[in-house]
Length: 420
Image 1: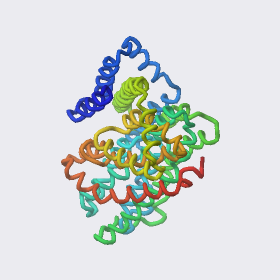
Image 2: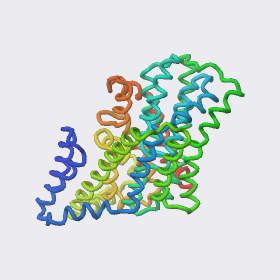
Image 3: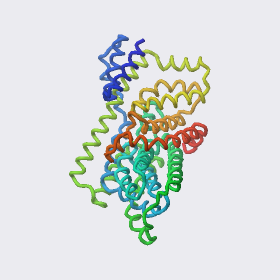
Image 4: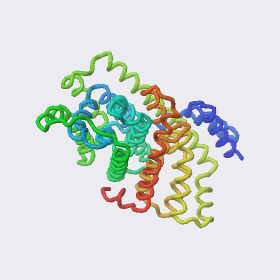
């Protein structure tokens, strides 16, 4: 009964648009009070839970992504890719997806990717004759690659909760991220041929090298970050702050598009975003304390075992669960609420924990573009000034792409595990 009250209160507060961190904390503390748990230790557990070296990578990647977005790095990346493929049928769609993939390999954030690329590419696509709803849907969908292609903030959280190597999780996200990106490109090209979306005037070969050379610093950034992690030179946490240093040097000294006023704005936004994420983590730890006290993960695992579910049935049910949760909650909250419950079941059904991480994140990508609370919908709505309903109509055709890729990833675990 206490568990029903807590979950019911959590969803009620979320539906009332109470910030998710507050919803988690209030419902969990009430649950702990009902089971006579000593509330004196709640604050201590919240602070202990966020005192993690692994989690310190989050502010680093958030900060680096914001610097990249406003310091000229993303702009020059777009110019370079546009000079090579912008003239082809649907070329601007391809530019959008490719730039989102590169930006994703730096920022680790889906909303940041959609905002940085959408602010430049949506007006450009509309000016070239693309339907605005389609353009907004493409950016919102391609922006979700920010949480799949490493470095990924949700994968960092997953590693922290499941005690798995962040480096292995990052490796697992590479091929699925490329597969999803390729699927979006193929769909975009098909739509362009069907609807007659053309490209920009063709840039002569000799004029393509200048923007390409200007973008080299941005293209080297993912190599710099991920290469250092996979080579064992730095940990993901160390790499995140090296990325900040690299982005600052390039933005201030090379491109010279970052000044102190912009820097203060970036710093404030980075602090706000990081504080929001860490408050959700701390509040979710209180919920985890309640679930552990009531032995809900163990009871749920026993129910799954007694029901005779095989792993395929379980993955189908869990995917539907993530889809529904993604309609109301952020990826951070979904991981912290559900993963402690699901880990015992994953072990029982002999599902690889690393493979499950990628399944979980792809489901969350779908949640990022699913109303009523899909974050990317509001990001794109904000940068374009269009109603959220218009963005939703733009993303609907892309749902099928995500579902197809999700099925492929579930059926072929090797795609996630071959690089780990």
